[in-house]
Image (tube, rainbow, N blue to C red; front, side):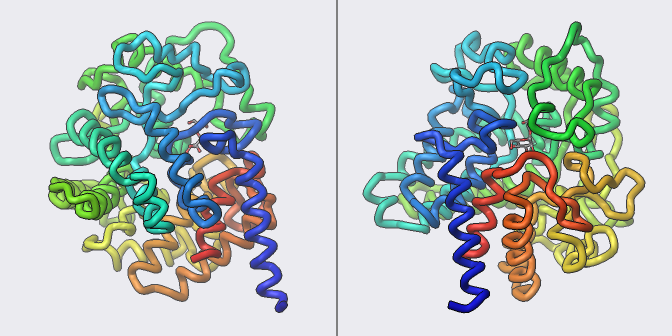
Length: 426
Ligand code: 2M8
């Protein structure tokens, strides 16, 4: 066996071990210490990797999340494991989802995460169409996904068709500079100590501060006590390019799913609307998409990897401009380790602070897929290989320094393993 195939085998084996360790019978936790429950967009990314190991388990991963869907169609960002109540904050007692008539019979959070689920569902189906057909996977998933997208389209999009987030946690890129000014304008109404079990598992200097946590919690309280109503009075509302790009991509995929199971489809039109709406977030000077604060009215003019995410849309007209930004000094494709989460040249860049510079494997995966689908095969392959190397060298870190590849955050992180596995399995 050659050295190259030996390291490929090592990588595959190590990825599978992480996924096995974090499997909890119906779903996979992101990391056993820091994140001991099921997270929404993590599960979709994890299923994309799991399909190479066990298509059936990948289906269960998504189905377990779908079983936590609220009556209004939202997929909650966390589904809690009651046995780990004190190990993550805010826990189930804080969200009090059972007080709402709209919720499933077990505890969840009440906010959402970016909609990558339909895309993951389709990729899992394609991994083993026979097993999928035998279990009626698409037939059962489609109504869930339809309700989810219905919720997003009717309750969570601005008139132009962009997804509106109501909490930084909804972005998945929680501590991105996009949310700095809008979050600072939110009143911190919490009193007393804020429990931070996360700081046992990750370096406090990398995680969001207590001041940010105070505002995170006060937003949850406000949303919760208002009955989870998506009104326009809410003090944090931002249009986000990453969630909108994922919605558009997922609508394209939902069209495929609907066709496969013989259903009519409103999805292409919705994909088109979301893609067109992204143009209102284009920043010519920065050469990428940005976020817009609907409360303070300001454009959040930062280059972040979220602003490159529309590259995943096949019909995007800005592809060449976005690729120029990706290859330039801000993101240094091919020179940095994977893709930094924030502009390497910005004053706000930090190599190890959470979502403010370090490279994340899920974002590298999105960019690698976009490069591959757009025909930039050498760059796609190189980025995929870099993901594998960085995953193995960092013991499957949550994120890595884009200059050195040094490990940060928690280790043995599930989507790191799943997405490195997906790239190596092709
Ligand atoms: C991080 O977010 C959670 C809150 O949802 C946290 O910081 O405690 C983010 O990286 C998010 O994108 C991810 O889904 C979650 C679990 O991996 O961790």
